[in-house]
Amino acid sequence: MRELHGWDQALFMVFCAPHNYIRVSQKRLNERRNTMFEPIRRFARALRVPSVQEREMAYLNSSRDRFDLEYRQQQIDRGLFRSGR
Image (cartoon, rainbow, N blue to C red; front, top):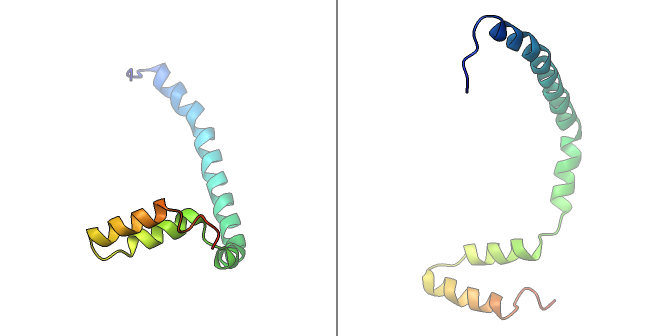
């Protein structure tokens, strides 16, 4: 990045100041929106059904050792979670 000297440096600071102010105010607005809808988001997350990928990953993560992990991987490859049982 090139060095800014003299007038270039002063103009750079002037042009950046309004942009930084807008970024801060948008960040505050987004924080306010997040706090307002957070209870609704938590309720929706509680009712959401896990996807097939999430169920497969939870099944693999609960394996006890590498042999159990390999067995579970084979079951998933055979369609344990995708067959609609």
